[in-house]
Length: 355
Length: 275
Ligand SMILES: Nc1ncnc2c1ncn2[C@@H]1O[C@H](COP(=O)(O)OP(=O)(O)OP(=O)(O)O)[C@@H](O)[C@H]1O
Ligand SMILES: [Mg+2]
Image (cartoon, rainbow over all chains, first blue to last red; front, side, top):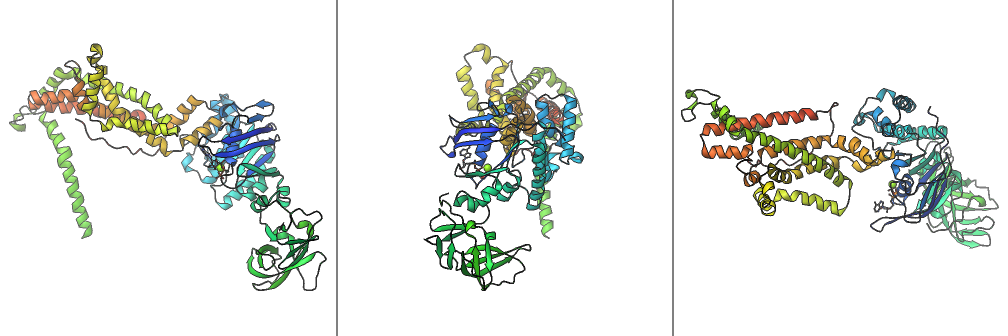
């Protein structure tokens, strides 16, 4: 495998982007990416992920005042061809006039890498990405997954300082996406190359990212490790965007939350006022006899979906909106059953409700 | 029954095409080889008229070739980069340029020629030089080259391909030569064929711009039909075909890619013959 040096750290300082037509795609963004880290930009369509990535790539320049650093070099005014980045596009952007091997060696050719070295690197890329039997193939004779492998090989062949990927798996079907995600994950771990990965798929973000930047309307909603973002979302927007979250709207009453289905004890110093959130897996179905000190909510099962390894229930009556909970799939539960739910106080999240 | 009807319709169509496209050409060519057209083939076959045409008009033939090739060179050098630039830029001004480029098609050739004469006809050296005709031809053919290349470049995602190339370290001109040109190949070939054919066959503009010394083949052809024996005019048709067919074959041969090209053929409007 090609020996890559540990990737350079990347820093963005106050990088905003206003397009010529007046669209404000990005509010001033400060971001520090460590060398070798995989940072995922995650957010709904139009939130500015691609714009941020293109500013790092050098395909867009930030509004005046914004600065981009690769290590100690400021690259703000440096065009993409001099930045030594590797880029993988959603649409692959492979050159239709070149075959697989020539696509991979393109970057080495334009950089005048000496022939022997070029051959060696192309060969190692073909091996690494399992493309060796396809080296002579034309691009239009490849499957989607193979194209994406070629795109990745082409970007890595030049040994970039930073690898940038814009929704590289979105065009593939679910199974292939899973497969390639695992491959990319293994690759990034072994290469230790600084990577910025854009996606709107939260499971992809969780699986690949050392850290996730959740974005909304051109702003950062939260930055953190996948666990942190999942378990301690900074806002209702983040909680809703990542995984499933239930919202309980009730009345706070001296450390308790009073709801249509009962009362729940709130954690110490709860900041959410009368609104608490919880994850489906954090609610427990109580037996008839149990009456835990932290309270319980009664409700009616209104939908059951059996997923094999677990079961999802929609429960009505506990709060103003139905809640989704997870249950042991071996439990015999049917629509119409009355159940009681217990939720540990520390699993109740108080969030700012703005997005 | 239905199939029969369709078959008859197709047969009829084919016969019509033959009657109006091929038969006149063949007859015209044959006329150039008969000793006496009025008496028909019974008068015998001869190459006399062909040689006579060659003797009378070899200058026109030479000039036609020179102008066609020069016209091709200019439209390649000007038209291909223009199309490349238009395909990449995405601004209302480029739309405008694109539209402007087509206007010579809407203006009759006679008007273009008249405009040229009024504006630059006073410059005696230029007026009497063959490049005066060349300017007319370039004006007339350039849109076809630009359109043809642009059609191909618009059918691929050139902008993203270029961004990919740039990310790999390719400079502007490296991108032009390694990505832009190769992917525009089928459009360039189609455009080149069209420019050559149009230039060699162009009559309207050329007739206005020509001088007794600077004549092209179509102008000579009109002359000879008007003023000489019909056999000479017909032999002229043969000369014309002998000239244009090898040119077209040559271009196709030069353009034959090493690998089978998969670029989609450009859909380019076929201009009506202008002779
Ligand atoms: N060239 C441009 N000119 C004007 N507005 C633009 C341009 N490119 C993007 N925008 C706008 O900027 C905003 C952010 O776009 P961006 O492409 O960064 O979103 P994104 O998060 O990548 O979305 P998606 O997930 O759909 O790709 C959007 O509102 C978009 O319409
Ligand atoms: Mg995007």
